[in-house]
Length: 543
Ligand code: GLN
Image (cartoon, rainbow, N blue to C red; front, side, top):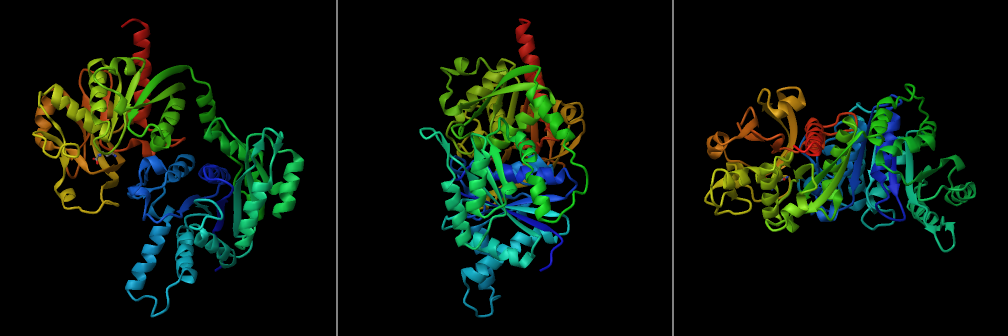
């Protein structure tokens, strides 16, 4: 298979959590900044068909694409760095591969053959490796292989990478291996042995890495680099140091300094299409690092012990904060620990309050108490998905006086189901992939806070939820001042609520955080931070 598209595979060794996603995104950014069209895909070795059914505690946030795929959170990094949409094809799991193969087997497509890991599973993996490249839209496809080399589960992926070298031909294929060089305090030494072992494991699987990217807390002396080159069969200038960075957004510049992009281009026989252009990126970093204001914002949710569960929200704050040159001190607070007894104490230092998305009853009443506090004390409030639903429920209970008002998710027998399931959701009995997912249109009310923030009246945002605002209560709720300022033009579903007579109180049924990127900060986050700055300033003036 001769290929126009170049393929870069990123594997990981020694430990997990070394940041393969960030390295992939940073390399992608550098290639993009030299004029190449790049996409990044992730292959995950677990058996779930997609991460939609995974507990956020275990796997962090589930990221949602425009086309409604529930994907690994690394796809969020790819979009935030490259500013290019990903899709269902950018995240493939072992579960999906097996599902595809077994479906074909049931249809008789293998013509009586014994269906085996090699070649049938590896062929299915490879056809997914090449799928995006074959669309003709990309010069370079970067593929991140999840997990660590040597894991039983990732063996078929590694075998498929080995075979891909021969499918694609020399000069079209590259393996970058990300590894860790630990520092032993007692010996005062950086140790190369774990890396040697992980490369050995790759070699046993028939793969010679072309480039080593070495995560390290200390600079790698030349003799360490030489040792790595010698024992791992790589050229000395292909041993790349990846020092811990202050911000993930520094990594592209660090990788540029280490010439990762130049090594990749030369090994793939690629000439840069343009001069490296990182002007916007540097401008963003300049603003991020030189704030002129500071606000404290509380993120209230139930998965706060694992911040990765709120990855896109946290990153959206970073992008928006840079846009307004403000430092956002984000405090993650567990809604389970907020009650009507302690809320004053817990929330009083906050200049803005965000109630996070979520599922299920746990911590729900703490969110109600939080929204009531923000509403009554005129603290800027941003409710996302479940956060918007809580705002509607709180308003119904305490302003409309609808006792027991709730979402049927939390209380199926509530007398006032102000948030409820749509008819089509009631029929669904499977969990995976059955929510309202992906991009939907929303019409904004002219001159509403949201319309002013977006600077337009028609938007598209991504969704991931089952329950909806119940329009049977719309008139009553609006009459008392909680206005529906965003609606789906086709279904009339309420997508945004805003409180009148409040400096900034916005609840959105969609997830604005999925579309925030370094170069396109999300307008509602920008406007929310601005409102928090105004609140803080007016507090300082004693208003
Ligand atoms: N649990 C709510 C629903 O399914 C909200 C989901 C969310 O916050 N993503 O509608």
